[in-house]
Image 1: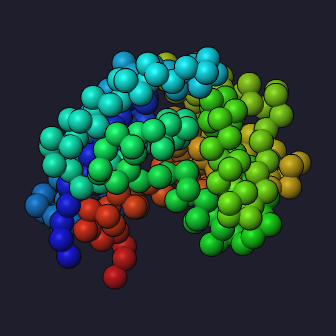
Image 2: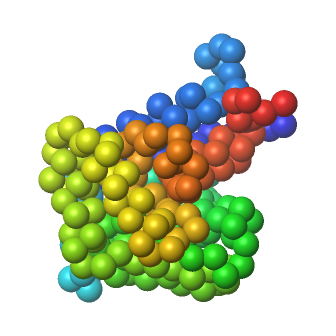
Length: 238
């Protein structure tokens, strides 16, 4: 199988990019350095806040900045591009038009996994930034796959944003039980069949196996596709 290099536009946020890279290493079937993926990571931390630009209705500043990253990755000769930031996928079509290199669509690929596991008509909870929720990227993809999307009420969404912006992004500790309580509320009170971890900052929070088995983490979906499209095998696969 041909081995291909991977380009990553990161920095949204830096902690999430670090976790993404670590998990790619852990999930790649490799016994020596040379069996890992060649990766070009652009940790573009100064990219405009995605939620801010979506809610302001003006994405030009973000697209202007990210276009330079796409040009750099083209010059580096990568075969695929991964962007470990759910909210940025609001601009997916605009970004893909800027480059001939395939950008892995984390949102659509995540919903494909959920549709395959849970089936048409399943109720799916989403935990994400205000920007991701309000942008409708997960809502549209759920509709395309015959799934029912459940978005948290205002109070619960505010709690999610507090964890993302006032804890993870500030590199402050988060009690796993706090985040798990939100997931349990979606599963029990809201009747969701599964919950999408749709923010890469939330992917940094460890979950107990009995909670994690009811979740589909979009970052993990992106990681596995990044490995497979780079011509490598997933660790544990025969």
